[in-house]
Amino acid sequence: MMNPLQSPKYFDLRTQPPNPDHGHGHHDDDAAADASDSLTDWDGKEHLDAWSDEDTARNQPLVLRRRKTRARKIREAVASLRSLLDTVLLLVILGLVLERRGQREGRYEFAGDLSGFAPRFSQQIKTFVPDPGFVPENGSEFFTKEVREKWLSIVPKGLGYVRINDTKGYDNLPTPLLFYPNSTFTTSMTHQIHCLHNIVEVVAALTSNQPDMMPMEGAWHLSHCFEYLRQSIMCCGDVALEGQQTTFPEGWKGSDGWDAKHVCKDYSQVISYLEDNSADKDVWI
Image 1 (spheres, rainbow, N blue to C red):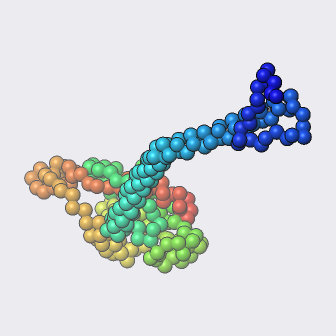
Image 2 (image 1 turned 180 degrees about the horizontal axis):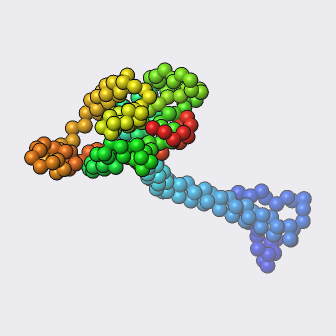
């Protein structure tokens, strides 16, 4: 007969029934607790798994959208960078083409050096101004120290004779001068001034009746200088416009050229360059 004070024990069919070999009491409570924990663990895991699956399903489109947005921004940045690089490369190529075209069209400097020895000098606008100190009307004055110093002031030390040590680095070099060390050459500008000075020297000696002041080179050198200067003038071909004369004696018409403006090289740069590369430092003309 059942004790009315003792309630019957019910077991969850999902759990293992108690072992009849063991006693009752706290062992039964432990079994119930284990059953409850097992049920709780099983239900909680099932709930978490269900929540995780639901959350993933709900958030998956947002993740994909973020990834697509990030990928699109990266593509746009790469496209912009590539466009910038293409533009820079195009400008560089265009600059190189224009530079090469300019080199082909203006490869040689007007009235300049063909070999590449001399650089391009700056240009200046010059108005010719008469200076009678170079060629005095009185021929005898030409042989004074003052006049000679004026002529020496317009030529470099060494009179434009230059030495080129590495001749292989230049094109179209003429035959080097004999009786000079290494590869020595003279320059056209100083040669022209030397010839002009020689002509004036002859004229001054003749007009002042001082035959002993004639240059020792003689007539052959005078003839050479006339021809050399003729071709030099024709080579330069200066076509600056000139107007009415202002210094001729009364009754004379024409142009003296003193009001014309000319495009010239910076003469101080030319002198400085020739002195820096001179074969020697002799002062003569």
